[in-house]
Image (cartoon, rainbow, N blue to C red; front, side, top):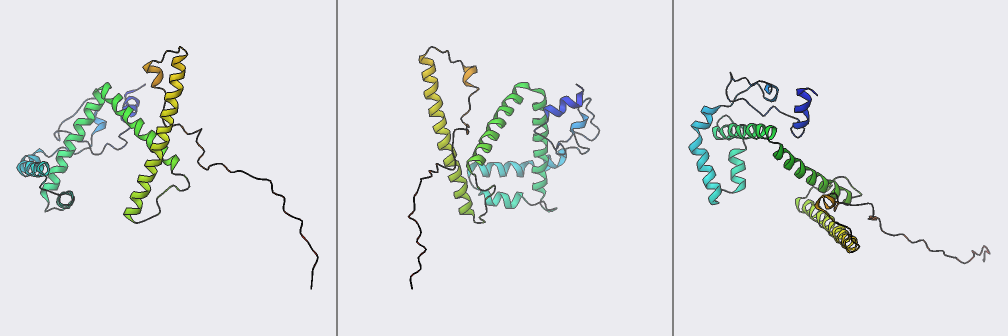
Length: 218
């Protein structure tokens, strides 16, 4: 396996690498040059606006700024909004640093992959529970929140049912003398669906209607 294939597997969660930058324009990194764009971090911009950035952080921590105010002031990419570009440069530094840590730390990759698998498993399970429509058709925020919350409520009820059933079966197996190891239990998932009938039971009853009289009376 060559180096590009190795990086391709490691960087699967990051299909777009254009937001990772070098420390200086003349910096060249052997073997990992492909991970970075041609731009470099603007350290002077971060240094110039660092006091203002720290003031924003302190205001957020003290609860003096509302989320709407933060988004309004820092979410506009205007040439006059220098603070926006300063925070953008800081975000580039953090993203690039995390990418390098992700590449060099096997344990960190295992933790992230495990968390992603859990999230994706739950999302697929909630989509399976929310059958009959693949999207939320209401354009009203309150109605959208209701659909999401009710969907999660039903999904959690099914998960609780699965966990209770699995626990009962495992206790019976343990009572019969079977050794339950952590490795064995880690293979079970609460997102089981094959035993759930989403459409309910439809009972067909035999009916014997009386014969139809074709005698026409005038």
